[in-house]
Image (cartoon, rainbow, N blue to C red; front, side):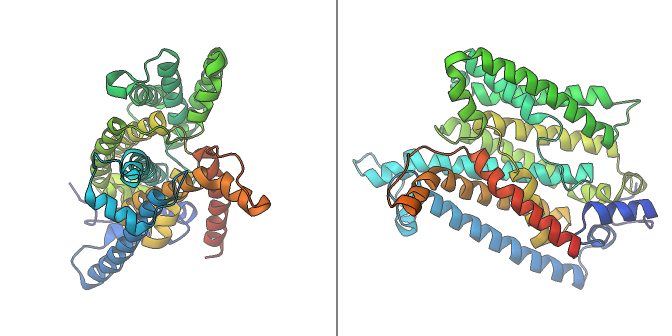
Length: 391
């Protein structure tokens, strides 16, 4: 069996067109990643530069993490003081700063890192599978399925069962069931067509959205609470859910990272991937099932976060190139950083706006994170796409 990087035959004209139209940032980057062996001076030089860029992204992410811990919705704590409290550990004293950092802000910040990281990784992997730069973690109806599961959990009072994991678990179940339904609709003689998969995802998502609307109307007085969760919120944050998301992030990223060479080939075309000994249908199933598990758990924990899983991979590819061995991990870091920044704006947006316009704070209500990411994500994506067209 040929491995990626060995026995490569030239891509067809249709496959070259797919690379150009799908990932316009670097027409030959994916082909280069597939055809060139590691260990050459050129590949080592490229790896060193990308490693440095990824390291800088991680440093920026750590800075955003400290800033998030410093702001919160009340008093500001300087980054140096935050580091000091983190190094001290959780104390049982009446130190208010230590309590705020460890009991309130740290779980919220970890929510952002884990949820944003998962959405970034899944969005990057899905864009490779669908060979479409507009694919996102919710493409196959995951968000609607997970939202239905989460709403059912809250309506039945199951949100705090299973050690407080009721909503994430039922969100996971809802997302996986929606994926199985989509695969059942499009699978024909063992073959899964990407175009049909996208169309089935839209149909299933619309159906589940209708069911979700009915469930929300049936909730009565709980409507505001459900809408706040559905639009994206990190409050309240629980350590049990932090551990659940951490396990899924580490495990899911490990699986997807192991598929990156195959994703490089699949992004060129399914015929090319098959000539390299890759089973495209099995690869789709692995990536979509793992990605759906991660995205559905994220929705079940923090709600539906719009645009983040779409924008983060674009930024990562701009910095690290199209090669998924690097851009996948870059998407994790970028997604985490964007989620941290969005949560700061969600917590402090209205007070800042009040100071700017009237000199005093407006309502101290937190904005939905999903609204913040959509507000900034949509224009950012348009700018990236426009730059890609001129490149």
